[in-house]
Length: 512
Image 1 (tube, one colour):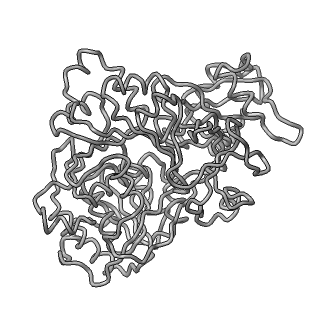
Image 2 (cartoon, one colour):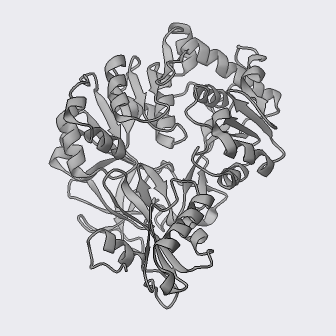
Image 3 (cartoon, one colour):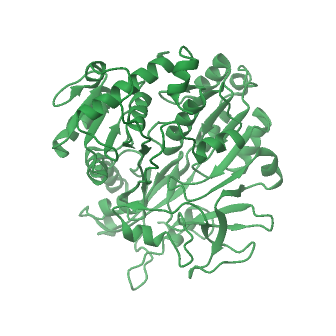
């Protein structure tokens, strides 16, 4: 199962269609261009196991490059288009990438990055400027036939840790043929009902693990992907009707925005073609999910997993309606709820979530983080907290690291805290996720000013501007509040739960 097979059997079928521009790339074109890309990578000296880095928006070239790397036995590291240059620099260097590809539309960040990552080749799609070479002409000079040493490559994606620095997840290459099936492909068929003639809509950035992997799985099946360059709720409904979309992958924020459309707008579009709407990445409020099931029918599927791939839980609409709030039963690995010492707890006991007999976790260049994710039994965890009922259904109740999930994007507080504490007017800082109706959570920085007399709107504006100038906008706080003294243990540990609970209505407010 691979796009190259459908280039022979269904060459003119659309592999993907860009929703905004309408540009269509057929399986024949995808196969030929990915062959050319693979030849280009070999001509640059890239060998099996080497890494390329992609810093791009949802470009029509994205899949061509990813499939070129896959058939050349390379790792492709997809970097968030929301990052600033220094954050891109860190990932490129940590991944040991030998090639950097960006889009002309990435603007000033793309222009700043080459000077930070010298010593590797730089390409730009959609035109070129500065030190970049234009990707398309370089690709087009290569043969459209396969390279002689094809072997399956893999993505190498980054999942942030509690220290704030992203952690690379680098799976071992299988050494298998490029068309060998994998567990995700089998799950998309058996659990989510994707077929070889499906039409799949992708409303999210392709640098995220789920959209990238799901779209490429659809290509392995021979279906068509509709790629939204940017999410808009009414446009999504129009695309579902226009293309008779039967499957897609979402985050709860997409559902929230869809449900906020006026009823006359929602009812205007025919969405009865949807047979499988999958969501993950963030907790979905029960009322939101209930409304989506009532609107689209019992076609809403949910799973709980991470980029690390150490385990996976799944729940259908029918099961969710009788187990509201659950993220399902384990279908990869076996669930274990453990206390702080790593001992297994009985049903309905809250503790840290582990998977037994699942794939191991291995963070690139971070043996400490790898060790922290594995307990004495060899079970692995993403750091989440929850409980399991007597039937084996998992319920998430907290995140041990207080990771913030805003609009399906994982945001880790420590990096933001490390920046704000460097401001001369800040004595102490704690960053938490507070409730947000649309995004699920929003980033809030609670500041202990060096001078309490300065607490107010002027300092708030100054700190917000400071954060926005030094962090990507998805990480910059949406709000700043002040406390005269943050609750810290004499050892220096911040009681972040006390701050967070004030925003989630669990305690009386501590915030001034």
